[in-house]
Length: 72
Image 1 (cartoon, rainbow, N blue to C red):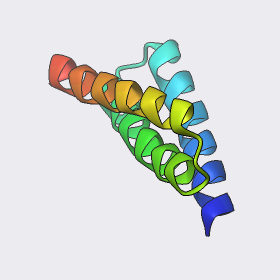
Image 2: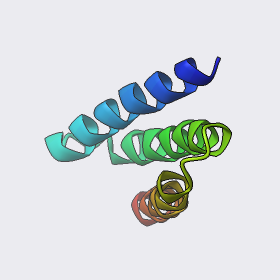
Image 3: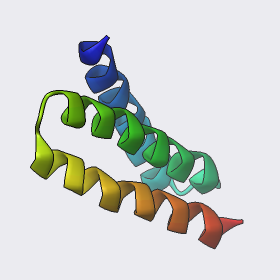
């Protein structure tokens, strides 16, 4: 389960990056994926006691929220 959180977070982050970089009008979906990715990787980091990565995910989660609000 913990390993699944890590890889789910990585895959959603890859899709987020590609959607936002493609500039195809899918920014809201991309930033939503960023937020989902931050939650998944944040949970993984918490369970594995990677507190630096956990702190970084708070920033990424906030960036996802700001991105969605900006594009709505």
